[in-house]
Length: 219
Image 1 (spheres, rainbow, N blue to C red):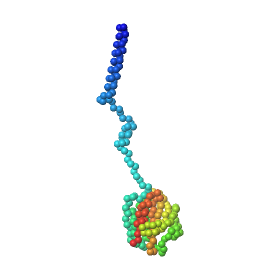
Image 2: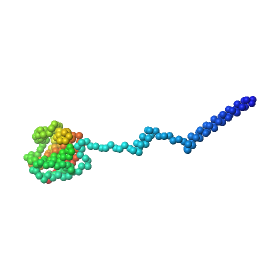
Image 3: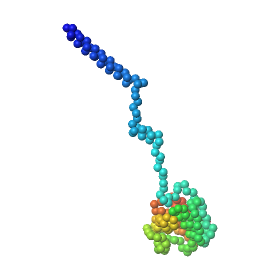
Image 4: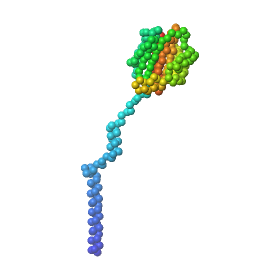
């Protein structure tokens, strides 16, 4: 009977020790002052850095020959040549050269060519197709895709010839650019003005060329 009592006392004491140890361990983790912070992982550090230093937006670039949307245009009135009774807008700041009744404005890969000539009759789709196209074909390297039509501009109905061809070889780089051409034939009272606009085939110059061709007026 005494041995049984001693055994029960030992078991009871062991249970008290186990319960006390469990409570003590639980308290050490719940205390805010004794908790050890978890170090950030590499992925968390990278995410935080990406948020504080966002990647820069990609730089926009236009295809070669694109005329900027903010291009300024100024009035051009010829002062020499066989006929000076017209005016039109040309891009400001472009290099200008003159030879006889022809004036040329250039900037990088784009060109505005204005030529005034005397003509007994107004140009037609037929006359441009049978006379002008063969002439241009003999002058422009790898001439291709000619198309002749009548279009309306501010000055009225005009004959438009579109085509493609190779540019002259660049004297510095030796490169040749494939160009797209728009040739407008304006006519009034025995005078014809041929306006030719050209630039790389991949350039989006529809709006700039429309501004120039639509600005032509007779004086």
